Image (cartoon, rainbow, N blue to C red):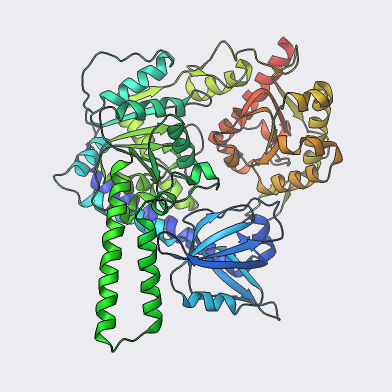
Length: 626
């Protein structure tokens, strides 16, 4: 029997791979900054230009912020959100770009308005001096630094809980459980109930494995709710702001007191109402604190540094402000039952010194292992929820990916401690024919359909899945740059014709009356943007525009629609399918539809791969059996 490799050596290897990933991301960012034009960045959603500057003010956290607005290209979904680093630039009369010598951080971003935190009031003067101002995403050093520090902490851990968890996850050690009779939850199905019980019994770790449509979030919310009957407070994290928002909102709906550190990805009053910033400014002591801060700023503006009484007064005000800040913070932190943030956000100084009995990580299969360790220093036990057969974490370095950086902590624990995993096995989203292929290929046929969705359909005697073969239609892909990937304009046109024909079969009025919703998915961003433009300029789809969403596979993670149309784009003589080989992405794409799934693709290109060959055969058989 081969000797187990030391966890320390494996973590050190991971640190080397993470450094390679950091360098690959940094180099790609530099190359794009130098070579990619502003218009291309705007189209990609990574840049706003031209930019209009609004008011500036100090927010409730005493940060200087400035509002900026975009007036053009508002139909392009942008990639700005809370916590992301940005850099301002100016374009001179010779159309040369000049980047301002500082980076800033997004506080929150709406469709056309963004609030950005500045670290120095002098930055305002530099922004005001610009004639043609823009803002673009900057390379994010912070998250990489936090992950490196987290790995260092785990590697060095000795004789503490962090060291125990590290050795447990890496050494196939037996995890421990409490013993008690199962608790009944009549509103959950048997596998959901088993998952909640496993979470409650776990002393070390438990995993809720939730395939598409199986009610993972419902189960996780129930597990958190039950845990809070035994513990005063828990920490709930996820990789993305969107995932944190989703679980937070569901917990609030369940009546749980949530404190959200950071701002939501989609700004609305409901989401903002339980953020730390909003709670802070609605505290009874806040008006007094605001008045003191204002007095401090006015005194500092006078700069009478030689006057001793001036310094004494300033010190007294600062001391009082600090005292009030600590009091408000302690009250907010003390009364919250759930503190929710991203994994990187768990390094927030507001959490300094805080420990939690339980850490819940949602969408754990999308997070790099190092990101999970950022939050785990604060916890005694770990609960992971997600699906490692859906979207993986993003790794840009081929070398780091081949070295194993893409293997998540969830996958590691599934292998080392399979006994802690509960697979949710009843799905409530899809017609059974849509779910069946995914269940067989990814979950050993263990996922079954709930009786009330098994035969759901829009039309009588409708085939739930169809594949429209574009082979022989002279529809070829085009390469449009590595960040957009590929486009197939002929297939895009056929996609809209197919949707038009299906709408006619259903009936336009029925589409509107029953509010049937549609998702158009393509793995390639260029195809997504092209399809969006075509729909916007097609009068037929005008009444349905609010019901049709067009996005990449990643953009549809966690979502569902009545009708899904997938444009696979790839069509070439060499059978090249690029990143369509990442079958976990395709698992997401084919499991978004409730009642109808339409796939468009060139079979001569795609079916050289066994997955697409099997999927095509399965769909053909369905049609024959109909």
